[in-house]
Length: 328
Length: 258
Ligand SMILES: Cc1cc2nc3c(=O)[nH]c(=O)nc-3n(C[C@H](O)[C@H](O)[C@H](O)COP(=O)(O)OP(=O)(O)OC[C@H]3O[C@@H](n4cnc5c(N)ncnc54)[C@H](O)[C@@H]3O)c2cc1C
Image (tube, rainbow over all chains, first blue to last red; front, side, top):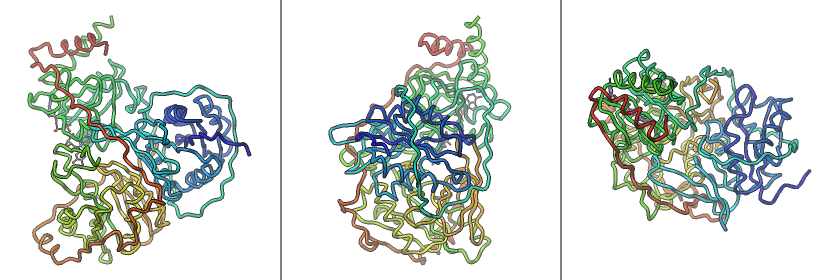
């Protein structure tokens, strides 16, 4: 077994339902490279390890520990936690970085509980000071910056998706296969997995530089197309308020806010959104905010850099044609 | 079937939420405290099951400040049979690890077939406690369920993760968490509010659960710094006079956003 660097940071790679490396990997490895030597863990289906390890090395993994197993297709969370426990025992990392996704949080939570490690969630970055690893958080919708650290031992950190811009330099591929003895911990069975193929060519909401979001003011699924038209004119991702999601105008993964996605784009355009505090929590750290709402007292105007009191159905088509005009 | 529903008292998100810059804790005086909406939905999942199953016994459980008792009692008014309130000054600044250990000890003491929690709380927004509880209780976790079916010996549901919809099933006992896709909770009625006064309400300290909050041999996550960011200031607001769209286009072009 190879020796692992003393400043190892263990990064748990996530894969998509069809086995590819998830987009979160670049940010996790980038963050890890700023505080130590990134060592990645890939729990994959048999045969997939070489391709995945190559991609991880290109994103900065010094070593890729691989576990080839089919158990992750049948059991929820526990196989990844068993692999992570084995990897942590081999690597003795200063920190474990995991994506703050639904699956990532489960793995982080079970692993921290099992190993007795301190856990910090939803970090927007990590750094290292004299005493060790520090996780940085943005809480209450960006109103406060909070740092946290472990009293001792490794810090398990879930990192907000799309929050880390740092990227690590590519490294040569170094694969190490890892032996895992199953813990036998009870797990839920996975009965079926249905890939949801986002057929759209639009940018993903998380990490997007521009977001156009629509609310209940759009009035119907058909009319919500106006939001899509403006998004396409600007090459923006599509966001929505919870009311728009509840009304069925758009799937829930587009929800911006406290219980949806938090975004910090260069530009956020809010159409027919009142600006309830739970919505603002997810978007008020955007660099530029534009709002269109027919109610002059809508709270969204309190955070808008440029607000238009008007009807989205007249203002937005005019905006789209003005943008098209300029392109010609 | 004994169902423990984990609820949390949080600052009302409709008001301004503040952190105390001295302690880093939620400033409880700054906003009104309410039962977290997602916890209410978790309770609704249990209540809906109990509506058609007489053998269901629902316990609401919360680790919260002493003042939260009235908020927890709302769970009884909604229909839970009993409440467990874990309160201890030593737990006020509990990190996720201590919170999970304390709740796990209380759940073990109460006994359970199923634990239901919200997927994310609206204040700390951690989202890892359900999985931590499952590990500590040595049972399966099935988190972030947007639909739930409870059967005699198992619980199943749907989770919408990035890029896939996954059907999962766990044998009981188990811990699940649910998302806001599940229905809003019922309102307590007058009968429920009156009945709540007579229902068992247990108050436990850390010591009652064999938990030592100040145990320095356990790794903890601590807050090392906190800073408040200046609030965002409003910019220009115009009334559309027929050129609103053009004006936005100009704003975008001027700021190199289009
Ligand atoms: C615990 C909790 C969590 C929550 N989490 C979230 C969250 O993550 N994200 C979120 O968004 N919400 C969240 N909410 C809900 C939030 O409180 C609001 O209910 C929601 O954001 C309102 O959405 P909206 O602005 O689209 O709808 P509304 O508040 O109904 O606003 C619609 C707006 O459209 C305007 N309008 C109507 N017609 C037109 C027109 N033709 N042209 C221009 N303007 C028009 C109206 O003036 C109005 O301001 C949460 C609530 C709770 C309690």
